[in-house]
Length: 188
Length: 433
Image 1 (tube, rainbow over the protein chains, first blue to last red):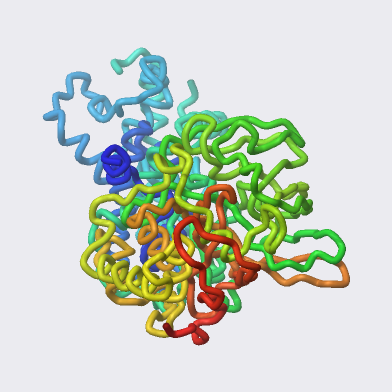
Image 2: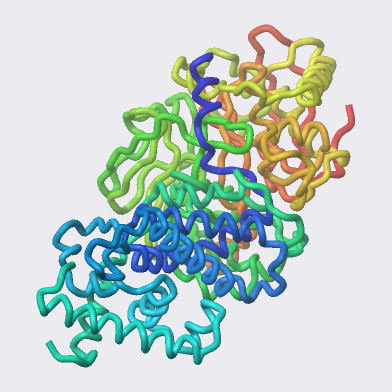
């Protein structure tokens, strides 16, 4: 019996009698969870970090849920928090190595720890993407991975459409420059 | 390498980005997400709680629990109905168990029954052996495959006692949704016309549920306890006379009361119930007497069937203690309280989830189950008769039919009384004693 009790105390319930708010929140979250996770992994290039980012974003959403005025906007609201969390993580990552930019490339210190491994690190597109700043990376991911329109990206990140348009334009120019530089044998 | 960004670069970029996207969520990650509300505080106001009725969060391995669940997406409003077409099995979900929320009532199952069979039957989905203060789970889970039409319970600890009279019947169950992951059937399942995986507690242990997915109809055969004064049939006095010679495996698994499950209020409630059962039986209360007394007690009007008890108790204390103290809650509270009070009195119990009897069309023999019939109840083990169901939920929800009285059956030690309490049906017709 003692054993049973110990087991009962440590086992997580399969069926937990929950609070209606909790459940509603989780049901809302559930409908887009995979989508958020994939986008975060695309932006961050690392599934473990993507899990952490989405977790932290959803936790933040849970804490601030009461501030959401319009429940119909739940998905968009969480989507923006997820993207913001990714951006903060890229920024923190950039700050961590104290800018020892030996290659002279603006992207060299930004290369994400990529679980695709060394081969992916050598990937030209990967280097070009890593050369972008966090906002540019997010805009590119939303445009070329999530297939959002300029307007949808603007809504997702909370910036004017014009800003997104020029941000994407600069991002592609920068990536192109990186591709050219890589192809010409520049340091990577 | 051209100087301009090209369409080729576009597609290389798309391919590269897509290659970074993982295919699926890991169970551990889903679990972390599902725990967020438990582990962090949140600000108070959000959706109006009155719109949400009886709710159960499913976490972890609970996808077995079906999805009595998933359907209740409808409770959360129209936005979700479009948004979450494919509720993945491991994710938290919602059960709405209150009929008054009419718009949440979605088709769940269609069951074709034998001609003339009009018994109200509870449709079991899953049983649980371990109480965790906030809910129920399966300890030592294992699985075991069964071929189509092979005996399901043979070689498990849940094999039906040979001494128990059963009526074997078949039911063709058609899920009305993809969300169900287990088979439904009345107590106890015998076979099913497709190969399935049994989810068991312990190796070759006790049946928790039968994994079945998709919307294809399945034919389930069940052996239903025969009520009445026939050999092996179940009557009130026979269950009184069943004694307490429980199989050791039953005792090992179905008596667990975790520390903290019962506080002062639950202990007082148990003492009160035992006291009354003893008074009524001249100090010879049997497990059946205690069980019916608990049903009577919980069906009393002082207990309020309330699907919204937000904030009544904190999120860490035992739901049994909370219910005993505040006397307000829904089926999970009623059933958990009954199961734990009996266990505390060394009577083996388990919690069962599934659907209440649906609407039977006598002309076609087709029973329609809707999602708002999701329910939780209790099974109590009686030597020689096996598991017998009890539904303590008040508020008029329970539809359990009282067992028949019978001719005199001598009890091992006590003198049975002919006019003992019959489980009442509604909340207001409790025989006061």
